[in-house]
Length: 413
Ligand SMILES: Cc1cc2nc3c(=O)[nH]c(=O)nc-3n(C[C@H](O)[C@H](O)[C@H](O)COP(=O)(O)OP(=O)(O)OC[C@H]3O[C@@H](n4cnc5c(N)ncnc54)[C@H](O)[C@@H]3O)c2cc1C
Image (tube, rainbow, N blue to C red; front, side, top):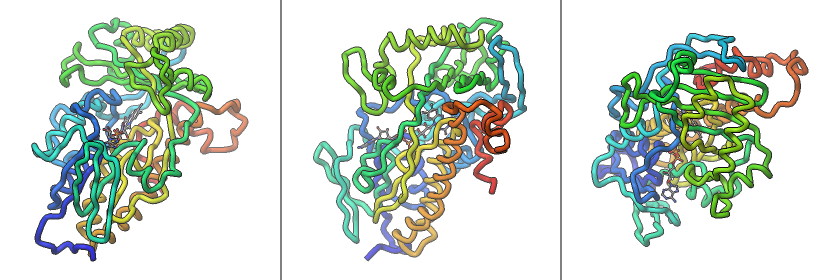
């Protein structure tokens, strides 16, 4: 028998993964009266993932509901601009948005988790469940039993692999290179051209973008910030396999940790950039000490709830980063999870309600990411599908400026 909402003792949630999804789930379930514990595989506090992050109103709402400290969240940009290959502005779109960093978001969400309920160095190995409870078994031999297990363990989710091993990330055919440049090192010309803006350079099959974020220790003072430099580039599977081999000759199966990207792979990036990028983007790359790349994958489950186990965030669905809303999606997943359970007659009914609401949204986000990503691989010359309004929209510079890192599609029919 499942326990009902009027049970007197607090119910216990085991949250696997201490990144953004896990912190949102722990925080919001706790506010709904749950006892929550977060178990993160890493032995040390998480830092430095993902560099720049674009925010959306939905994300701000999830942060507010979690009780996160929102002062000095990031840098506000007021417009988006597209450059030509000489660095001249060829398109503008007024668009106000707060851009921040993964570190900052993690820091303010981490502060919402009470001491003693966040456990580092716990790697989930197995799950057991029966009609009354669910048990997490960790690599260190410890077992923890609760009412609900939240799989917030990212796109290579161990939890998902136990219940839906057939769902695996699918390589999208391109990678994203990234890096941070200190504002103080950027020339006046490049600074004036792009620093305060969300800037794009969009030759066919390439998206080179960037925006300002805080400096180290959330320093928002002019002169002390950084620019988040990003370049999406098509890379064939065989070439990717070579790029995923580190200096020691070890091949990394899905993605390679940033410090391990080989120097000859970075040298090739810098050479291609010299042949290809407009002056401000090229100069800012020259200020990035060690750019790194992440292969782009699609992932979408067909179920989010498996008995007393539920998947949220990237463990359930990865929308390509053009949509810029992985963390916003994680936050709303956690909100809807807490609300669905609170308003349902029992836990399993709540999880079913959560899945009914969130699975279609995850699908929409993944589809929007694919639409924005088509530009990266489409060999058809503009005009081939000129009669297709949707294709034109996602292949036009105004369309890309409008749809990148925007959550407006979630509100359209
Ligand atoms: C280039 C790029 C740009 C992006 N830009 C944006 C943006 O602008 N805005 C935005 O909202 N999102 C953006 N995203 C997406 C965002 O970074 C992710 O969606 C988000 O970090 C997912 O969080 P998560 O907690 O679900 O997963 P993850 O961050 O992957 O965390 C999973 C956690 O689970 C832990 N874990 C894994 N296995 C185990 C185990 N067995 N036991 C215990 N712990 C385990 C891991 O160590 C990790 O800490 C971007 C992503 C990329 C690649």
